[in-house]
Length: 333
Image 1: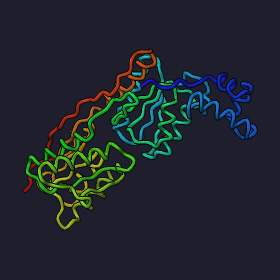
Image 2 (image 1 turned 180 degrees about the vertical axis):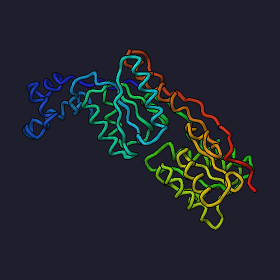
Image 3 (image 1 turned 90 degrees about the horizontal axis):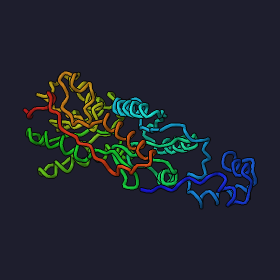
Image 4 (image 1 turned 45 degrees about the vertical axis):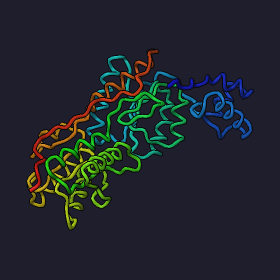
């Protein structure tokens, strides 16, 4: 996508018929100019460059920025580490912000980073309010989406729906017919929503289903996994296997099942998605769907660098995922 270039402050001032200083004050300190002047400058900025032109950058060269849902998650930490290393090789720095899975927090971070004059943005997912998309489209800098994409921007993606299907088909192949699922809140998390839909698709193919009462949303933490697992095991007909939308929740499920005296996988099979490093070192080792998080971070950084160097964008690049079978799954009793 060819993004609109951000207009120069001088262009906005000329279009509004005001001095450079007045235009700057209107954008950076609107409370100290008259309403009429402020409106003229805003109208000129919007006409020339869209919503992002209303944010006066404090100079370019601030580096590349990444906004992730949380810093308290090894998935995003690994991606950020790969971004940092790749950008450092090119002499670029990485600024990091966290949205706490909240669209309003991400929007505030976008405004702040654009005001800092960042040279590029890397974001997670493709679900955000219209105001955020308008800012991104008019920012005039490279934008790369990760995990889930939007055709308006370059993207380094994985097929999250396929990840859910892979996990479900593995358990169906082992003979499980009553499955439960634990995932993060789907409302503002397109990765978790797509993985849940993938599970449902695979079950439907086999003539099975995943009713809402066997799908539990929780915070993406070990404690959240324990709470959700407890709810599923307390059902009158508990599932013989649980799919977790992310490995952190799967670890919580393992801990909760074992605290109840259940043997995994003899009494309960558990599958995760992401393949965190710790997944291979649990007891039992966790069966999971591998998502190449480090490669996502590296590829996203290289995509931004390519745009800054004037090369063509990468479009939508999908990285492969695969099932990693370990010892937390087995046929049902």
